[in-house]
Length: 108
Length: 184
Image (cartoon, rainbow over all chains, first blue to last red; front, side, top):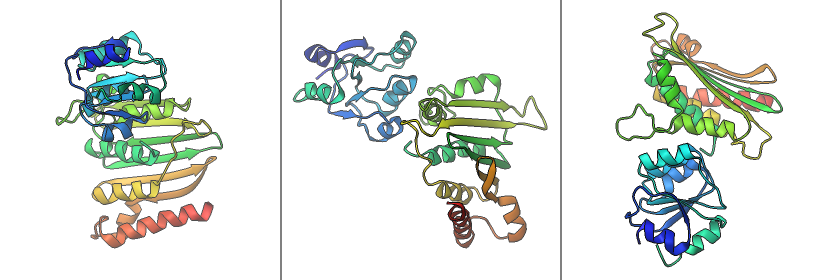
């Protein structure tokens, strides 16, 4: 499924989507960035509550299809600009990480 | 990183890459605060580069476009309410006294404080990997130095024997462990 489809199907808000046609496959949940960096699989959706510039860097490095910020966490405008420039899709969910993940079940 | 000792390894590797002949690693602890300092006499950086290194999209690597060592150390310090600082004098501008100082302070009682971890193994790994450069490692509690290792002193005793020899590394490891055990 494409990131753009996933966002609308799960009702996630889009913070930026420079590459909406990217296919999503699987998901990973984690907040310790150095840990995520080595473990999140390419093309997966990464669910986190962290919201600093390093999130964009880890997403880019791990080559995930999108970041889903859980618990209503958001990014400031400057970071959204950076994510857009680096081609990182960022979605936002009001739900906690587990409930956000259950929304993805059967879709990715 | 799950342990600060891995950050020490990462930053000190940068010092070695910058051509440092001596890299000083100090840990100063009080009941509340842990301050980590890494001082080298390497080639240093320009003001512009110093500003850029805390940006994860800056890296000296050519194999990938993101460098997270310094940004993650800064994050680890700041998420405990602590602080991070980096200053540098480039060899181009300062012919005699050049190098870089990285310091990070952590509030140890904050829930998000990352434990120090196995610092003995980090220090021995560093020495083993770079036997031709010098390291001075110190760990103090409330201003009192409890652990100290200076490879320049070891070198005087060892003569032509490399610091990366198995027996030497084992000795360094035991020597550090002993100092930690003595003071608990």
